[in-house]
Image (cartoon, rainbow, N blue to C red; front, side, top):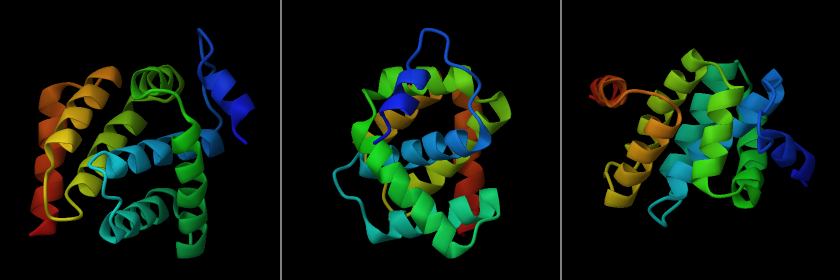
Length: 147
């Protein structure tokens, strides 16, 4: 279903993604982090939907539809390393930084931090070209909002 999109994304020099494709790819990474611990919890799905709605000014229905598409893309996407490196080349720094904060919100949505989620967060942060310190600050912002 997403073959042409994935081929463009995996090209040696991926093009800058149009907004709709960037949204989909970033949403797919949110799904990947939510699935990292083997428990794709309803709280994580709801958090992804709310974040997509807020980030992209979508209705709840449109956010759920984007997430459903992202679930399919995530399942078809290659390994996390190649997928994330391609996103780094195709998506601007500010969007990648916002994605890290969104990913922390998904990780923390079920009230627990799993070791697999932490490992994936460290790897994705590095591959996206985001400093560990910036990731830690993003996590702290998410934790403060949850209080």
